[in-house]
Figure 1: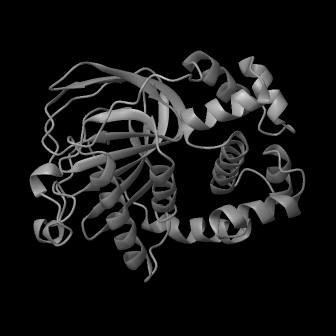
Figure 2: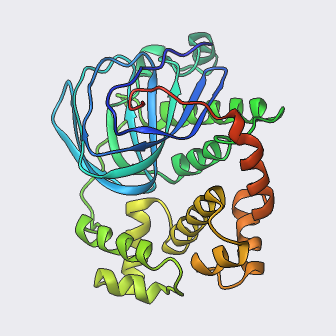
Length: 306
């Protein structure tokens, strides 16, 4: 199934690690810069998963203005054919953009599961944290930016079906419910904590340190942080350290020992253990794959692309 992906809309967005395409699934790893983006009606369902950065987002499509924060772990959805008339960012974000067929799953397959195709339209919503979408997003992210392997097609097909099933089960127009107002971690506090983490990745940060930055008890901070981002503070900190280490490896900026110390892992042994547990590769294997795969990376075009 060939997907019709939108072309370039604004300079300031660019591909970070190329693209990947499988049957019914097109994926781009992109940087989104600040500014206003041209809008049109997408031919595909678009799922954007924020990997890093912070940006306020203002957008609108056949309904009330939506304002939210593009924070790591948050998801954003655009249904196929949405009449989006406004899309603005005030900061920088790194995101994964996943394009799916407009019907998500073939009508015949929906019928097999007693699902009415007319009730399978994805809602226009964003800025929410969903642990299942986070797991799927990170799994897809692991497939992008490296040479494709024979088993990737099988894995990607399973991820596409899992993503489609989850969207149909929770994010269609007849099922989606705006989250009720509950105690939340205020955006200004969350941004302060995330800035604190980014500035001190190389330090030995504790839960008490992060909670203190938010002026909350460790218990309440941990609960509200996971609610806001979809990740526990410890997992988020580890993921940010791993992403920082990946950039340093790709840029060939330092030795493995220096990278381990600069990203807060304390020792090369601890860094290698956590890196392998998180990515499935040891740091040197990741470096070798990046070097081997650099020749395969090509510029991408997308709704946000250059």
